[in-house]
Length: 425
Image 1: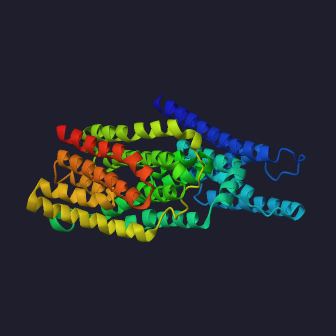
Image 2: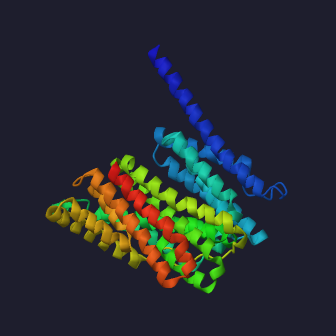
């Protein structure tokens, strides 16, 4: 009885796998049939029925490879490929359509059927659904490709280079003074910053220029709030009547920088989050509320202005940031041994003038091994406060006096609120 029950369950599982192979083929066939729905019967090389049968054929081929001979699957796949090539070649000669997307989709359907039987139904289903979505969004994909600029494609490829290619090649071991330098971890932090900047750039790029100063200021904080501050300062000198709105954009950019610190902590040093949350909220409130007030009061003067046109990713900048990260970690270890926590605070203040990323990531990582969480939180908040105060200096040197007056109060309040909350905690 046990053998009979086992055979029954095995057969039932096999029937389910073959049914899934058939349905996955039908799924892709529905999409292909929809695309060619206006053609006459017989003019389509492969529709719903053909794709469904090819999916089932893939499942049967995988089953035969397991039970009869391993050669069954490659030989059957080759036969299906030859039949499909003959059919698509005949259609190409008639319609002069050189696209092989349908051919690739048909061969993938065969493979999905085999996956459902030989590997796993979940994996086969996922692959089939993704394939159907890609096939169905031809117009949208081509539209995005037409909108893509050369520097953006170059930036995307560079991001893949530093993440997919270079990251796995780096050694994952502790080096340097106190073992604070781990090449793979340092490079991963560089990839993290580059990815956030890349996403922030395209958030502005795809949002369109009609969103104007506020939209740009809000999302440019993901990329470079310092660069946006300098741009808006120069613009306020050319068009002083828009200084309040530009100030709102700068304050929003300064505020948007703060959630990145929480993201860094969540990814690199999760233990920092509970203590870092309150200071970040305090700093954000003193920046966002005045920005919203300025926007509400002066929104009738809103002028849609094109966001910064810059390369979203520079490989040289990534390399320099990696070197800066390593330097900050080494200096942090030396200063901690020499001056204790006071040395780290000094380093945080000096580093915050130029860049918050390096010191925030360095302290987040050090908090997991060599320094107290409280010290790391206070150092990160201090660096953010110094960085925002430096933006006031930028506007005073390059912008309109009205712009400087508009941001000085909120930025100063933020620089006091954040460190105060951090020290009180």
